[in-house]
Amino acid sequence: MRLTALVVAAAITGATVSAQQATPRVPARHYTYVIVHGAWGGGWDWLAIDSMLTRHGHRVVRVTLTGLGERHHLASPDVGLYTHIEDVVNKILWDDLHDVVLVGHSYGGMVITGVADRVPDRIKRLVYLDALLPDSGESVLSIPDTTRANFVKSITRGAYTVPVWVQDTTVIPRDVPMSLRTFTDTLRLVNPRRLQVPSSYILTYEPQITPDPFQPFADRAAARGWPVYKMVSDHLPERNHRAELVALLERIP
Image 1: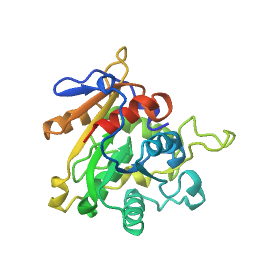
Image 2: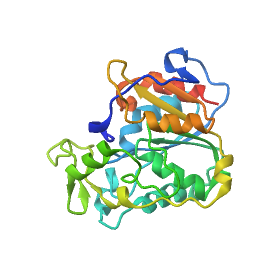
Image 3: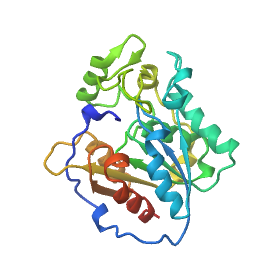
Image 4: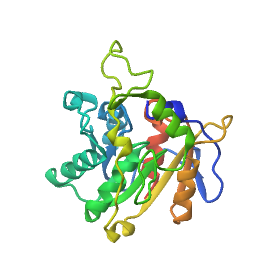
């Protein structure tokens, strides 16, 4: 789950494109997707999406952030947002990736924003998937949203955040505790070239549930002139609406 307890959905207004309009097709071009998961998760959660995109001829790199997933043994209170930004930057540089479609889900939106500030020349497009979309000077907890702040406070256990679904008895692969510092670190953006990277936003929504806590980020994206897409799904399309998500990712130029 990625901030699952916070996630409900609402229809987005304005210039949006429905995932249901994205008919399956053989993509004319193949891309290199770098996927950044959300809080408490790991690259493991994106294996099925990886397989589907790979079958269509794309290259997929699933980054697992430090202290999470199969890298849980590296967990530390010192792991912060900038640790996770470095994880992705170094993967791009050491694998010599270029023209990357960088996808960030939920908390992953914080990470890919920082990555774009560091290596904008390596990125073809940013895709925010039901994700946080921060401005410079914001942290996860400082972005105006009382519900999110209260939720994080309720699950904080010392230097870690531990949602109720994170249990040691759950079969691996599973979500794990995450350093509180990842939510309190302030993102500082200094490279104006990041603004030249084309960007898109995907809002997942369930029509019967409103308001959607990610709607403000879709609104931010729209205000910047970005394409905003919507698809009917809960907050976990990588688990529950895989075909629709893959079709939409391939539709975004």
